[in-house]
Image (tube, rainbow, N blue to C red; front, top):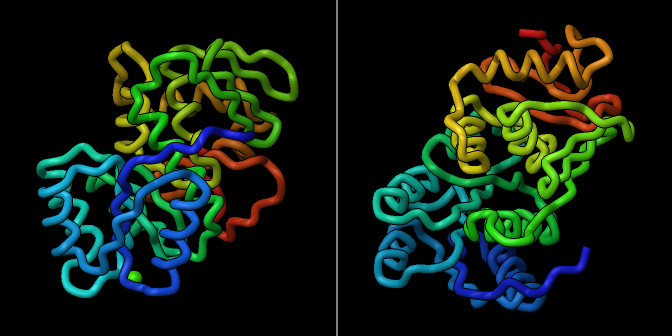
Length: 247
Ligand code: CA
C-alpha cells in the first residue's frame, strides 16, 4: 500500500547508536521526517517542552530516567503521539507503557518498516480519523472496513454493534498485540461518539459468539490472562503463552 510521505519533526529517544542511526536514516529517507535524535530521557523531556513535535519514538531502556518516566513527564504537558520501543518478551512492560499514556509500542528487534507502519497509524489517528481515511483492516479471516463500518468473516457479513465494532477495530489495528481493558476503552472511545461502557468482557464474549466457531476456545479473540485481550490471525499460535481461558 503506497502512501505519501508523512513528514514533520519527530523526536527519537534512543541511547543505542546503531538503532538510533538506522531509525533516523530510514524515517528521513522513507517518510520525509526530520528526526531529532536524543539519547537521554532528561534531555528529551526538556526538548519537547521547548519544541513541540509531531510524534515521539521512545525507548524504554535509557540511562538516567527510563522511558516510562519520560512518557509520564511528557504526558503531563503534551498529547503528542508516543510510540514506545520495548525489549522482546516484556508484555507487562508494554501494558505499563500504554497505561502511562503511550499510544503504541514496537517490540525489539523490530524492522524499520514495522516501526514506520506504526508511526503512520499514529499520525492517522492524531488527525482525528476525519476525512476519507477509511481503511480496510485484515486479521486472518476477518476483514474490517472502517469506512463502511462493516465486518466480514471469511467473506460472510457479521452484524456488530457500535461497541463491538470499536472494540474490534482497536484490536485489529494492533494484531498480535495485547491490549489491557483500559487501553481498549481509551482507543474505543476515540473511534465512536457514543459513550463506551466499561463492560469490555461482555462485549468480548458477544463478539466471540459471532466470530468464533468455538467461543469457549477462541482462535481469534484471545484472552491473555492478567493482561487483557489480543486479536490474532487464527493460525496455529506463534505466541507461546498460557492456554486461553474463555473468561
Ligand atoms: Ca536502550
